[in-house]
Length: 454
Image (cartoon, rainbow, N blue to C red):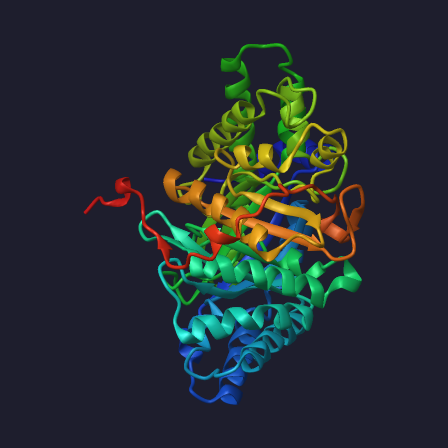
């Protein structure tokens, strides 16, 4: 039983160590909105979202005030729109019209982001999927709160290289459409391998087709809490280090469990999962990179970084699963460059490169996240980077993702400014050698042999 004593125990974490509930995300199924008429479809979507989430923001604010727990974001995820709109939409413009409806609904209920402008094409794409994907740059450039994701591969199906090639072009087009704001559309677009159905974190959140009609998922974050706890065991053995991380993750997850249960009860919506992800912010002291330094590295990216991150990720998960029976989503450590001041400092110092970040993604909870690259980067190079990350996820049976931002008009040494939780990012160099012939082969990379488990 979770009680107010456990909340009081975390007061210091909240007041001094940047502990927060990063998001309450309501997942909403739009499968019952499917219609062959585009206008009627948009009406049904708007009505379903606004009716379902009308009390979400107020409930989050009430819980935050009553329990003294900061709840930073209130968000919505919906069924992948490529599925919902396939029967009605014949053009990219018609799909983008759904994005505007989602944006209008998000404004109406007051959430900061709505995710699910998504497609699932890990093995192949329908004609509707392809039209949808080509609508993404337009949709993101013309909306404020819509987030988009595309699942390109999985351990069971392999990697859809046709879609990988296309997404390199789509990312570049989205960058050009928002070049006046440092290619900001790309901050709301992520590609996945093994995307989870219950992820509450943007930009990758969508409401999976295996989920209930509505669901409440909560994402908790506390890099500052973990760092402060580790300061007290500086110089101790790895056993002590691991136990400290586990105990801290347990306490943080209990806060998320309390908020999730309370929101579920007040909204009359089933509780889904708690996602315990160490998701940093640009705020000083709220950094995963700083945790790695506290473990013993001079900078994130130094030798030993991948081992330290693997340790951190595993102990966070172990502590979390003891605190809640329903830990899900991604749950672990995020390493987004623009959202983590310690990562930004490591890049600026020359300690952290794109290649080292790729190695780190083998053991973290997501992938190459919020990485700004030169605006003249080729679409095929973007696709090659995506393919590498998809391969890591496929072979290692884990979720991996890529959120690249080719910042038009900027080069290595420049900075991109995104604002808010999205932060700012140094432009990172990419390998100058080409991969066009590899990317343009077409078809699908088969699933690895260990995927055959029937």
